Amino acid sequence: MIHSSALIDPQAHLGANVKVGPYVIIEAGAEIGEGCEIQAHAIIGGHVRMGEGNLVGYGAIVGGDPQDYAFQSSVQSEVRIGNRNRIREYCTIHRGSKDGGFTKVGDECFLMGGVHLAHDVKLGNNVVIANNSLLAGYVQVDDGVFIGGGCVFHQHIRVGRLAICQGLSGYGKDLPPYTMGAEVNGVAGLNVIGLRRAGFSAADRAEIKEAFTLLYRRGLNVSQAIEHSKQQIWNEKSQVFWSFIADAKKRGICDLIRNRGTSEHETP
Image 1 (cartoon, one colour):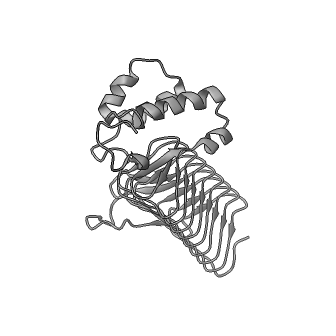
Image 2 (tube, rainbow, N blue to C red):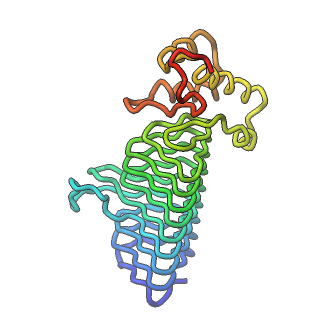
């Protein structure tokens, strides 16, 4: 199951039933779990730790050095990939930029052609990223996120659970859980279809809508909305929303597109 033209260092570790295509390069120290398939011309760096049942597509490069001016090649960092992921053709995934750092792909993610994950990016489980999307260093993407084609993300940005991003949109601020991101740093509404598909009950969806309304449609700034939210008890799924908002860093969160151009104290 290993093509004769593949170059596999003797110090690489391949599990059972790994399929390696023509002209693949696997460097010393790489670990590839059982049942993976590495397609033609892909390169797996020596700092890659990969679980079981993964597909690495044609020409993909996994475990390359970070595009960081300060990076030193002696740094001991990794790319950690879980199980049953599809990493399609010409994706690039760079290893962490500091000693002990790592770039992570969870389980059952789907990275379509040309996706780039920079150093120290962290993907949760069941994340889908469409063609040619670019994630800068330290971007964090939570479980169940769908990112449309051609999206771009500034470093250190977070994308919350079950969010969906419109194709060709861009983010320099955090995108809250359960929302639909669009345009530049914009929120178009709630990802209602995604919540239904994820099995959220009608009661769960109604409470999340209430949280969304409090944050975006009551004429409050973020700090005021957080304070108002403390006046009631939220279920676990809604608390995920508020915890994400409370943890937003100095870049803040994406704003509601329909509110743009309104007075700060005007209720839409």
